[in-house]
Image 1 (tube, rainbow, N blue to C red):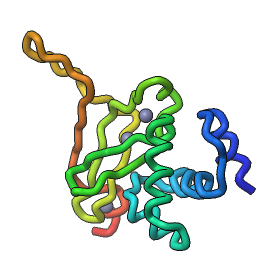
Image 2 (image 1 turned 180 degrees about the horizontal axis):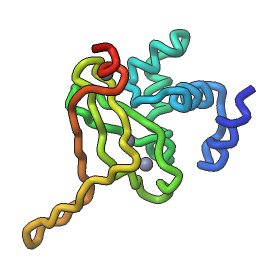
Image 3 (image 1 turned 90 degrees about the vertical axis):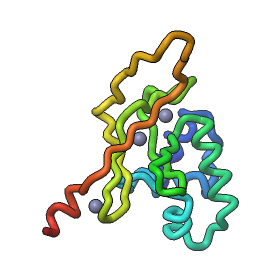
Image 4 (image 1 turned 30 degrees about the vertical axis):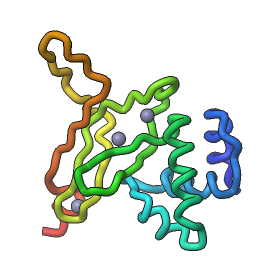
Length: 139
Ligand SMILES: [Zn+2]
Ligand SMILES: [Zn+2]
Ligand SMILES: [Zn+2]
């Protein structure tokens, strides 16, 4: 039933428990980034702390990356295949001001900024706000 999720987890050296496969399945079906409570809603029989631990494991193992979209709750989305030792998700994120959904713009990378002497960047976060295709269609 969960062949795809089991394979993906094994590739990342994660033991494919039922819970982990369920959470991964939610991500694989979603077009946008998900918060802890979004996942809790999808899997209403699972408890929040278990989901949270699963998310932390996934983030450490580079299955998902977290996004601070300014909404106050972290969102998570699947990583690119090239996240191995470090996260490589330096892409732009788009937040729809109407439906509040956050999307990964995987094909748009964050422009490199040249920092003053002695400043070293370790990560960058770029959020573009506006209206998503679904919300634009409704007008
Ligand atoms: Zn990543
Ligand atoms: Zn929208
Ligand atoms: Zn992303």
